[in-house]
Image (spheres, helix red, strand yellow):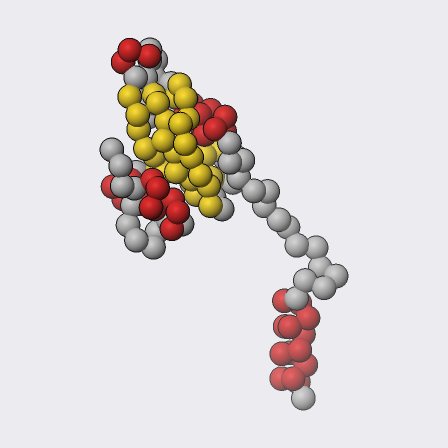
Length: 118
């Protein structure tokens, strides 16, 4: 009988009926949010900025981005990147494609669109 009460109480506590559940706001999937994170990332050389996001897509907290980057238009180039939204710091973080572009690590769309170009 005691075991039955313990099991039943686990199901009641585990359900969300009448229990406040904290939710995490979704990642802002916008060119502006990605560009801002790119420009403020520590590993970006001084004077290099994301000039224009050409295409992008998000799946949950993952994103792929094709952007034209460079200090000035004549020396800019296209780059494909993959990103993860970090809820702790509140912005997108670029990922090392060498480490992350492996089957099963990223959302399928992000893997397909962000890992097979330049």
